[in-house]
Structure formats: C-alpha cells, structure tokens
Image (cartoon, rainbow over all chains, first blue to last red; front, side, top):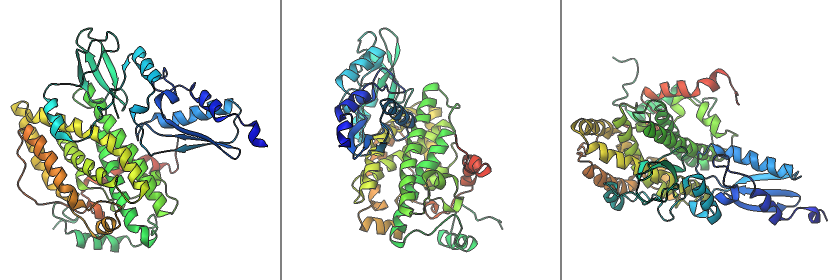
Length: 173
Length: 284
C-alpha cells in the first residue's frame, strides 16, 4: 500500500515547474521542456532529464536543483536519468516560457529556423539577409546578428538598429 | 638522420608496428572484448577528434580578435568537449573495463589517441583556425548524418544530438570563411594560405581501414570514403563563394586514427592532462 502514500506524478510535475533554470531564472525547467518524464518505479521516483546542449555546463546544476527541490518535498528515493533521445529542441519551450523570455529581454526562438548544415540555400542568405528577429525591448524587426554564439551556447547575439539595444536571441535548435 | 620519426612522411604501418613493439600490452590499455574492439576504436576516433579539436579551439579563449569571436570559439569548444563526454563515455561502456570518459581523456598517452591529425594542427592565425574549423565541420556534419542512422541506437542518439550543434558550427565557419576569403586582399591571402597548408590533412578523414570496414558492414558507422561527396559539395559551395582556390594535390598525411601522431599532440596532452597526472584523482 506504499504506493498510496506517494505524491502523485502530477504533483511532482507541479513542483518541478517551480524550479528555475539556473542560467535564465525567469523560466522553469518545465517551461524549457527538458523534463521528459516523471514516474514511480516501486518506491523510487524517476525523473528523466534531457540536456539542451551536449556541453551545457548548467546540466549538473540542473540535476542538483531538481534533487534539492524534490528532497525538500520529502522525496527520499530519487533517481535522475539522462534521456538523450529524441534530442531536445527549442520547439519544446512552452508558450508561457517564450513570453517570459521576451519579457526578460531574450528574443524567443523562431520555430523552423534551426541550422541544418545544408548550405546551398543558406549561403545566398549570408550575403546580407538575417533571420527576422524582433527586438524584445521595442518590438522592431530592424535588427542585425552580431554573432552566431552569445553568452551561452543556446543564444546568439543581436542588436536592434532602432533602439540600439543589444540583446540575446534564443537560437532555434 | 633524425632521432625521431619524421612525422611529415610517416610510414604508418611500420611506425605502428614499432609503437606496438615499444609499448607491449601497455598497462593502461586493457584489451577489449574481441567483438567490441572495432566499436571501441571507432568511438575513440570520434571522441578523440572532438576532444583534441575542442582543446585546440579553447586555447583561443581570451585571445580572439573580437569579443564576439572569443565567445563563439569558446562555445564551439564547449560543444565539442560536451560531445566528447558522450562519445568517450560510451567508449568506456563498450570497453567494459570501468574506464570513464575522464579516465580516457586524461590518463592515456599519445600513442593511445585516435584523433585525426588535422585536429592537433596548431591554431596559427584566426583565419587558419577558422579554415581548420570549416574543413572539420563540413566533414563532422557528414559523419554525424551517417552515424545518426547507426544500427547501434546508442551511437545514433548521440549523433542526432551532436548533429544539431554541429549544423551551427558549420554555418558559422562557412559564413566566416566566405567573409574573410572574399574580404580584403590581406584576409584573402591568409585564407588561401591556410587552405593550402591544411589541405594535406583532409585526406585522412576519408581513409578507411579494417576497423572502418567492420563498422560499415555492421551498419554501425558509415564508410569514411562515402562521406567525401557531401564534403566536396559543401567545399565547392563555400570556397567558390569565398573566392578561394581548392588545392589540386591529393597527398594525405595519415596515421592519427592508428595512434601515429605529429609532435604537436604531446604538447596538447602535457597541458590538458597535467593536473590529473600530477594530482591523480583530483576533483572539485
């Protein structure tokens, strides 16, 4: 009957939705879409987490934060599993998460614009045209890419040509 | 009469034999299960290439010509080292001797490394580093596409993950090769010199041996030669746009995949492995 005393899986998801991403603390781990599964295996709670980027240094902090949050809720037997497949995609960032990013000053990813390594078409665009990214501050689409990589692997550097504000763009992956 | 093998023209088979004689049954190299040996070797070849290139690129941290480029190079290095953890982690699992990704990275010597020689080339100037990155990225992207269809699901899932990251690496390095190649007279000259200097290190990417043949036959990894067409096409697009001339020669320095390296690898390892060698088991 031990199972009856377990907090429900829904309750655990609710707790996880309060754990902030360590690098972008305005969004939660569930907003980011990196929690891939929560289940009870006997009396052990298993949480499956997928990394955003292979080398993301926040991964171990995220695991620690999950463990701390769940232990704080009285979970004693806990196992975190790394789930690699399917690989994380920015499509999994929730609509609420995107709005929080924008309000925080990070332009959210534009779906369907991930790099694909198929160069023929993209080279033509390299000569001037940038992806149209709206400035999270003033909303202008008159912006330019400064660098493919920004303050973290998941972001690129942009600048607004109207309000002149530099900003991060959360790259589509 | 050089006291060391001349690494510019290695007789690979001969050197490999001499290395094997000189280091018989090296204690840090437990023999893997027969059936897994080719897979273990293949994983080392991929993971060591990303590790050594990742380390090389990380040497730019704090030295790049512009802050944005500094950050971008550090991010590329981070991706490569992150991928290394996955590849070498799997290698250790396949080997089944309890070695972790860290053990493989920090506690092997040069003759146990299986990276492509191009990965250990010195950085040179910024243009040289970018050209090396472009030549590697174009190959890496093709390789990961092939590995994502691997019959081994563990290999396939790492490749699918890494492939998304490498698509960005390739776009960035292509973009910069075009800008610098089709830039000023000075930047054009430097990019062409870099391409000419690195060209003889590209052929090794497409040379297979019996281990590659075994992997291809089992559907675990693509035949290296099969990656050439896609790579050639990427080069043709980007280098034409960059107004750079693709070199003619097909001479290829080789041996990295079999553990025969240039003198540069030893210096990289001396720096990269110092802490673990001097303070075994140190952690924080």
